[in-house]
Length: 465
Image (cartoon, rainbow, N blue to C red; front, side):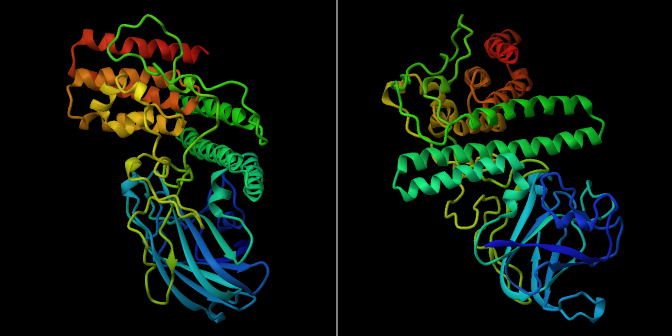
């Protein structure tokens, strides 16, 4: 489906800082539309299609993460101009939005509604907002609206998630991937798919961090803004690294290194402080898992709602109970239950099995964090390694092993992650170390000093580099 251009021709109210005209164009830095403070509901918003009467097949609404309507009604009209109350609209139905408490207001919900109507005008009737501590003036915000007609391409999630440079690179890779499939060069298609997904993952994280940085500056929290800026710099370096990857395949000139001894020995007092990582064992391939997750972090990420047919007088019925999938139109993939609750990871594939040669080495990890996430730690896919570290960070209070034993495993993961060649994995390892410090009150001080010594040394080496 291709996008339909439109302009806002009428609205009940708007906030001067977020006018309705913001909806006319899609951009990652858009402030979106916001109703006036303490306005009365319902509010109405009328969009006029630039090309006149068109066949409208899909409506996408991207909600604000905290200023969220409880319900929106959709109306259409074939009138070529809006004449206020004299314009007759036909009601299509309504959709509801979640309160976003589950994500702690760190995500935006993207509603996708499939219709089949001839229309020149689309009217939204906006009902009262969900009440929360972040919405002081009872406003409703819409970050973007996308209208689509049959044929061709263009997706709101693409417009809103990636900057122009990243989006252009992704599309370039997609074209090459399609050509590889047409030529039945499936190895090349697989490699290009991995490049594409790595760029998507990094692009999502960059957009999220940029939004968090703007919020920190707005709150005059300059220390946080500086910290986020450093994280952005590390991720941008990853983007540059991806851009140097050729789209045409390069013949391999050497066999892959052995996967033996990929992790520091748990509990060992090691003298070597080399920047070791599981990634060091593998050839540099830009591999990643499915990363189009719209449900992730704060203010820049998107969340797809389940899609369905909108009928008059009825709510859009979800086709799945899982609201946190990242399926895009035409994608039949489903969220991986093992990664549930880990932002930007729910659609990763399962990691490969651990070779038998590493069975003994991985025994302690398996005993503490389980076989699945141990496989993630040893994976050639950096998203798997990152997800494993984040999972352990999130679940430290829930493991049924002695605190000292758990911290020794965490020390191994943190030491490995801090030396990883992928910046995001290193950042997650830093977060794990921060969590280890607070968790360390459960063990003796001498034990804790011994546990964190090597991860901290690796961290200092990484920051120095």
